[in-house]
Image (cartoon, rainbow, N blue to C red):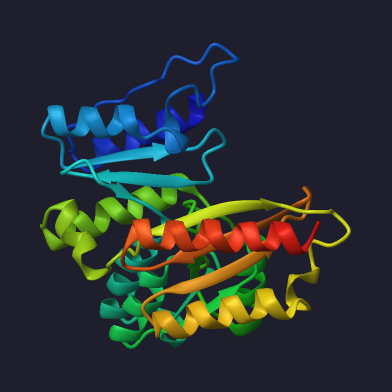
Length: 267
């Protein structure tokens, strides 16, 4: 943690950026306590109240990075991937004009890629699968919504310092506000509901005709402007129901209804 703080301070000073560092008093047990990439509220408030251009938040071991724009809005991993891939495509450095992300990435990332003629490949959840796909196909940019961003031209793993450096570089070169950078992607509301099921049956949702019919019905209704993703937990007796769409209250109702159906059928 101390090394990360020193690196952070060094690169900000190198760019001549006025900066403030928060939550930099570790005591050995307060890692991520109301701070970092898992708790952005303090950073959001500080950025807005102090008229900052950007806020950057790392996780405890520094392999993830999220940010906050000048209006106090979160810049998650999907937005970071859009911003960085757009910049790399403009510079001609995005290999095969391709971006890799997981199935949990927001629908908006896929639509951004389509609109900007970027090939979009998705993998199972986990940065290891993103890296495997990148190495297999020779791609150089991929990541997760959580802020794991892999830039293979520099590093074969997620690196929060590297991600924030790239974000600052783009911000300085384009000379626009951080909120303006995010205009290239529309993030769709996303709702995740856990259905508690019999652990022996959590993979049976694919075999149940009533569940399959309900999923197909929802996907047909969304017609490309929404998405249903069903994913059994690898460690718990749960089936995760994730729905994206334009109306958050509506998709919340649909996700809850589908989760109840799954619980009824798989217990």
